[in-house]
Image (cartoon, rainbow, N blue to C red):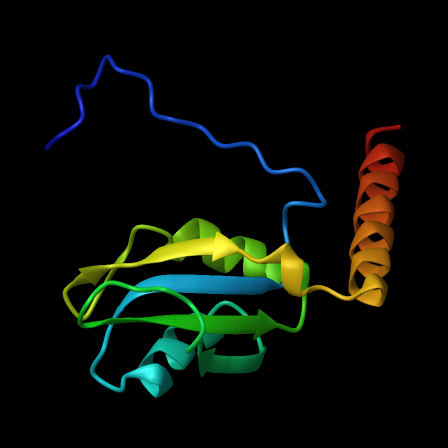
Length: 125
């Protein structure tokens, strides 16, 4: 159903702790297309992992995939571009998965974000 132009789009705000280099991709066709999905996501940055998740609940004839990027910024960009995109006839549902992060991953993520903010502040001044 098309959205009315006057109706504002729904907006979801993510904090630094919500974002993650780990993504969960739902609604992937169950056609054994993990390599193709990996190549689509690899266009946004180097992947460390791309594998199906057996423990996740999914609809019939669809799979759920776990994707790990090397950097949070790559995962952020991929999520923004590929969430709700069509892949082999199905609309992908991409979400962050910070529950898979280790303590070291979280510390690294917060440090990278801190450096980004400091760099932007110095550029403005």
